Length: 342
Image (cartoon, rainbow, N blue to C red):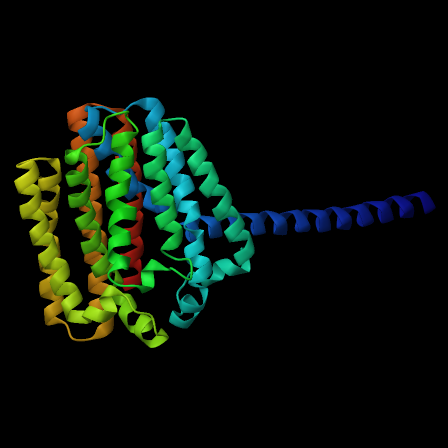
C-alpha cells in the first residue's frame, strides 16, 4: 500500500515537472519563432524578390547569362543588404509609433541595440562576400551598403533631405543593384551600364513617390521633410505618373523594343487606371487603399514579366526560381487584401 502511494506520488510529481518543462520549452520555441518573424519583417527580406530582378538584368545585359557562382554569392549579398536595413526600424521607431504602424510589435522581440549590432555584422559580411568576386563589384556594393545606412542614420539621414531621399532610393533600389549584377560577371563598367542603370533607377523613383503618398500626413505632422511632403498629395501622384511616361520614352530611345521597354509599357495601363480612380475618389482612406492595391499589382506585373522574359531568353532555371517565389508571394498578398476587404 505504501509502495503504491509512493509510486503514485512519483508519477504525479514527475508528470507535473515534465509538463512544466514542456511548457517552458514551448514558450521558448514560440518566442524564438516570433523573434525570427520579427527579423524577417524588420529587414523586409521579401524585397530581395524585387532587387534580384535588377541584379539578374545587370548580369544578362552584361554577358547574356547568369554565372552560377556569382549569382549565388550575390543572393547572399542581397540578404546581408536587407539585414543592414534594420537601421531603418531603429531610427524610425518614434515615427512609426507616432504613425501607429503595424510593425511596432517587433520591438517586443528585438532591441534597438541588437538590431544595430546585427546590421553592422551584416554590413561587413556583405563586403566580405563581394571581396571574393572582384574589386569593381566590391566598390559598387560598398557604395550600396553605405547609402543604405546613411539613408536612415542621423545626422545625415538622406530620407529627411529632399530630393536626396528620392535619389537615394533610385541608387539603392534600382541603379546600384543593376550595376552590382553587371560587375559581378567581370564585365567592364561602361556608359551602357550607367545609362541602363539610371533608367531602371527612374522606375524606382516613380514607385517611391506613389508608395510614400500614404506617409505624407504623418511625416508632415511629425515634422519630417521628404520629396512627397514638399510636393503634396496631388502633385506626388501627378509627377509619379509623368515620370513613368518619361521612363517609357527614354527606355524606348535607349533599348528600342526590349524587355525593359515592354515591362514599362505593360505596367502603364495599371498606373493610368490607378490615377483615374485617385482623381475620382475624395476620401483619404479610399485613396490610400486604391494606391496600395494598384501599386502592388503594378509591382507584381513588372517583376513577374522581367523574370518570365529572362526565363525565355536565357532558358535558365535561376529566373524561374525567382518567378515562382514572386508569384507565390504576390498571390498570398492578393488573397490577404481581398480577405481584409470582405
